[in-house]
Amino acid sequence: MDKDLFKKVVLSLAGLLVGLVIAVYLSTQLNPAGGSEATLGGAANISVDGVSDDIVQAALKTYVPPGQLDEYYMFASGGHSGNVFVYGVPSMRRIRTIPVFTPESSVGYGWTAESKEMLGEWSWGDVHHPALSETGGDYDGRWLFVNDNANSRAARINLDSFRTSQILEVPNIYGPHSAVFMTPNSEYFMMGSRFAGPIPYGTYSPIENYSKDYKGVLAAIAINQESGEMNIGWEVLLPPWSYDLSDAGKLDSEGWAFLTTYNTEEAYELLEVNASQREMDYVVALNWKLLEQAANEGKFEMVEGVKMIDPLDVPGSIYLIPAMKSPHGVDVTPDGKYIVANGKVAPVATVFSFEKFMECVNNKDFQGEERGFPIINYEKVRVAEVPVGLEPLHTQFDGNGYAYTTLFIDSTIAKWSLDTFEIVDVTPVHYCPGHLCAAEGDTVDPDGKYLVSLNKLAKDKFLSVGPSHPESAQLIDLTTDKMKILMDVPTDPEPHFAQMIKADKIKTFEVFEKDPNRLGAVYEKENARIERDGNNVTIYQMSFRSRYYPDHVEVNEGDHVTWYVTNTDFDEDITHGFGITRYDLNMEVQPGETQKFEFVADRAGVYPFYCTNFCSALHQEMQGWFIVKPKGQQKT
Ligand code: RUQ
Ligand code: CUA
Image (cartoon, rainbow, N blue to C red; front, side, top):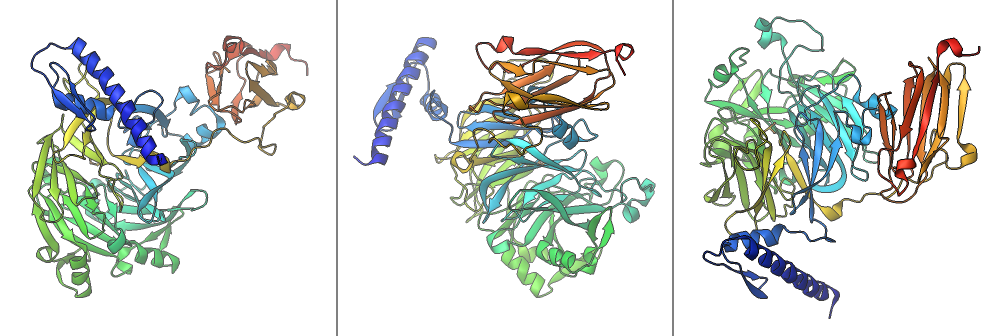
């Protein structure tokens, strides 16, 4: 028997067993009313009294038995928690919280010297949109980038360690909500502004000068292909409109970026009404390769240390495509041929042809201009207005020729054909979906297996926790003709966008390697030590099952303390914590890793420290004393 066939047989036998266990369990739990026969891989019929066939099938499709792993990772934005949440699909188990813009004491993020420096002066952030790195328009599993809509920052998470490794402040942008979206070979990710404001930061201009002095900005953040290091490549000035979540062109449309806008009315009060006056706003089509070239040729001014390009100096870099009334998300189809703009205030998803757009550009076939940018002739580029329903927000793809659009007001997801532009299926979701996430659903090669609806409201879906409820995510099966909801899970605020990547694309490492050149690292007891240089004390400490070495440390009140801890256990998952009581210090040190605290010992007394991660049978004994001698008692 060949290996694959053998695996299939083993798996279907295992599946059968699991199914039987569930069936027996369910039959003991539920009223025997009516009955159901579920067919398991054609191998057996499972009849469960009182349980519909749908429920049995859904349970079988989402149950990941002990010892088996999920097929996908889903990285979901944690909104104003400042975090990223990692789920396994199809089990929808939350595997990890990755702190990004907010301190998280469970891993010492915000207390270690390195993470404290990364977080800088801000104590919160607002993560909206994750973007996985790409090669050839497909996820490659190297890095995940996210935006901070509140404090105009970008962050990189290394996917070999699931840790935030860099935070970059992006000047000149007020609230980069239209972010982050990735170019097909991770040359850049882009960040476009939600708010307009005078630049640089700190410039005063009264609100009446909105149209003249307030600017929109898009930043192109360049990615070092070896290290993932982010640097600001260049920025481009935009009209003072609001830019929403955008997408980069791919394949046919590679080299372009598409941003939806609202408030082209340039209203600065009562936006709810005044920003919805026009029947049409725009999709801004931006030729990033041309702008990159302009940056290389010196066609920019330096603003806050950043190359700022005025697009009017680079003819052909920006075109406006009329799009229906305050559109929200814009998504490029997997083949790069169509651009789908979701209406928000109009009940349609509008499909534009990239080929026809290029024809208009080449023939200078415009219907006018605004703020010096040519307006493309709407009738010539629009191929369909798909009547998806009320308040369409975002669209994803399955790779089988279908698109899926969330309808916020209708509380549904509409499935429609990219060939006939007809709606083929609609499923209710609970409730008010914003984004949705299909398996690799925004790449050139979507998997089409699962879809997750990221819903803003979850009233009555979970046990009540008071007036405010969690948000909800619903897993939907895309392998059947009709979309089928398989399960609901609660999520923390706020599920904006998520991306789902095949699990085998991510390669994590198991332990930090021994590196005698690493600053502060010690691996042998004879090297562990406390050094003093005037008021500066440096501690080189080891942690291993089940002690610290040294396990008491004495300093003088007022000393500046640099405290390195190296975990010399090179076993996967043997993490030691290190918390100093009543000194507001806590960290984790992963296997083989060195971490550092820097602080001033400004209070005298005795402060026990201990290991906060349960690591061994004698974990409770893993402790020591930090002793600070009062000023008056120190010898000079
Ligand atoms: S945009 S819910 Cu913040 Cu992601 Cu559409
Ligand atoms: Cu080390 Cu507990």
